[in-house]
Figure (cartoon, rainbow, N blue to C red):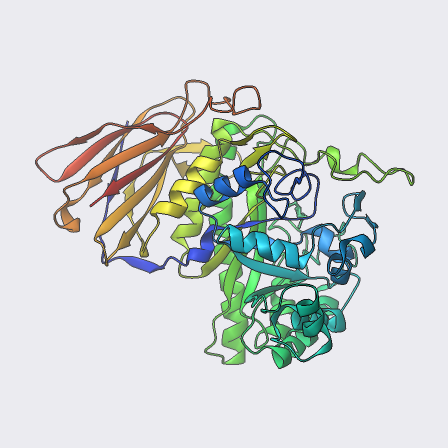
Length: 502
Ligand code: AHR
């Protein structure tokens, strides 16, 4: 079987915003505590942060980190997490039925973000709180000094403002599971008031309004319309969230999950643009795809497990999915979908970063390791430079129960005019067939260096575990170049591939 892709550097979709390679840290399970923060770990630094985890975060190439939630944020009092540690209260975290010790809060996490060269993106609580608390935390974070909260920050040891640019106006406010879940009209009102007020403190903030927590939500579409009709001039982004899982053993549909992500993005863009058109506005609302991943092993079972009033564990093992090669191929394909929409998806966050549906796993007192999903993310973050290209793709198709006929091969490319380098990202979604991908380079000009790496395995269920942390890794792939300017590469079944050309 053969597929063909033509790379034309003139067919630009748009600049790839580096914030496309963001991630997400929630106070949930062992993401923060016993994850990135473990003061008793041999690798811990003076702040109690695991340096082995920080090294992996840098290697992953994460640009922004959304914090502190997630569902957690809708019950969170941010001021619990600042000031002298011995005075910080222990609180019930209703979202995950856990105890929040507040040992880590805004100042500590901002330090961690600085140490990992990531940009902090902060979510305010619009579930159980409102405009005033959002103003307080913004004042604490961004005002240089001379006011109550900014002076508190200085007194707490951080004289320089944190300078947080991107702010999320609540989290998944359409979800019945969310503390303070609202109707679109209710949410639109509080989001609009909060946004306007926040800009009075700091006109430089970039604001993300909540879209639907999934395209499968009954209010999807209507939610976006109503919310944007009220907040269009107040915000810069609308959020999308999506998690994918194999349903009833239907791996063919699961491998085509990016089809759903494509439609989701295009529907939200269309809705936002329709609202803009009706308002006669030149302004464009972009997408922050601020939660996305494969998530299924723990999704529909574990979360509701603990409900007893006397059981509020600290940092329990929650949502610790162990990813297979096939899951990583889907993650790689979702990145292709995000890149393909680089004109409008200007930020995204892989949910999450450490231990909780994460590319990085840790064992308390023990090692940290890369899950299979680490590899497509790290390479996409490292190699996607310049502009995303609208590639011409000709691929055989296959039938899926969920999405109808879809191409077996999916691909996108990026091209950096400054360096002349091109990166092609592709997946083979066939469960049983190798596909030869012909890459037509004739429009690229002179290409002297080529490399290819693949994520695939004879066992598509192989994983990296505590016992065998390096079972799955990237391999070099052979490229075959012919005189006619075509390069051939054999994509194994269920594989993710990146080809770099220069
Ligand atoms: O990422 C896990 C959870 O998924 C988040 O807390 C929530 O926003 C979403 O439902």
